[in-house]
Length: 536
Image (tube, rainbow, N blue to C red; front, side, top):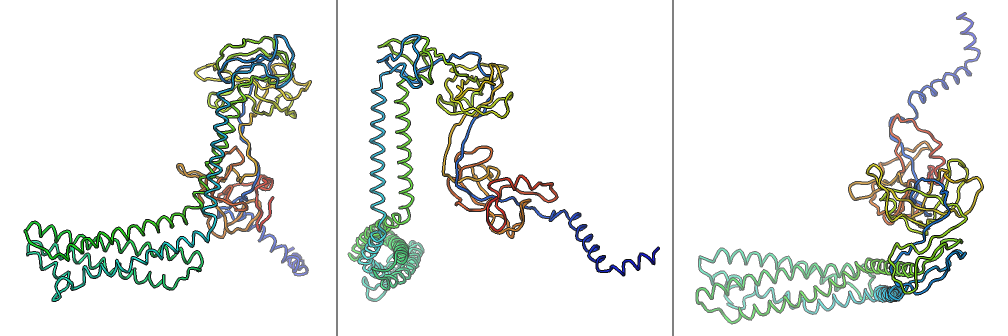
């Protein structure tokens, strides 16, 4: 038997070799589990799209077709638009309240918006011309170098010259003028002043040489660098002047305490130092203002753009508030009874009329946190347990003012009117509503699973090199952390306001070693990024 098997193997030795090799390779991947020794990453690309946030609740289809239409604001009734029992169309004005104050708020909001837009345009005009900024920067530096040579030379004379006594330096004269009691302190002050002056002189020489070699027509970056160097040099010169001022102040205080008389030249030097200080600080202030203009121009524009956006939102709010002074029929139906009289003052929440409709209404229960975000007029999607394949659009028409407490939990009833009819829907059927709170279009979005938090900081991990497939990829380098600012989000998507750019590749999920994974969810994810580019 063994001999036969041996002859068979020798006869088909090539085929057998491939079989053995296949078994070895197959066993390797079976027991290795496909790179199970390292973490793998499911990646997603930052995309631009729409995102919607909603609040979900459940309830029943109402057996009653009657709702209460309430005033949203307080005011005096100036017009009644329907009679008791009258049929009115959707949007018809039932009661009009005096809108004069709301109209004034709209006018003020319009003026504020126009003012903000003008301020933005003025800011853009003043900062949009890089040539003007460059010219201003160079002129400011040139103005500084009209005075700085005099300041540096004068400061050198005060500390190192021999003008008071030709037989010794001024610093030696200052030190010998005091007795042994003040000798050490004066020596320390002179040492500091000399060191500060030497540093200032070095920075001045270096910067003055750069100024001499820089043309007015140089590029913006070169002039910006010259501006920064001149600011730094001016600061060191200002410090040197201050140190010399300390020397003379100590000398004068000592003289007064000992009733001695100083040469008048010392007093002149002290006045010169005050002049130098004013000159240097004045040039510093001008140069720093130009520096801030260069640095902060984009931030100032962004801030003003945000102010314009805030004014636009304020105008929208004012216009919505003005609309609330017209109490309208939420849909076509019968105004069973008008509960307001012309000239009467009514409060927000007052029931203006009991309204009857032939359309279905779903009463949805929401908790106190969710109901705070609900407003009449918001759109909703209605689904039903009894008819799983049916989805009907709806609209919020009424929200309970007073909640119901059950076992310590507060809930509020929200009525949602059906946007269309379906004969399969019966009263008391279970209904679920997804009420749309906010929708944004054309924004950057990432999978919500990709967003991580650390305290108040939101961040994401960016992948910069990978290889793999839709079961996860291996990264050539560890993912890089990137802080981001987020906007609205839902279970699937999160808006990214800043920190990422469209097309960036981020880590949506980490597959730990030896974890059991399925390729289908990643493959079906519209954000999934296949290795080497492309979207799945």
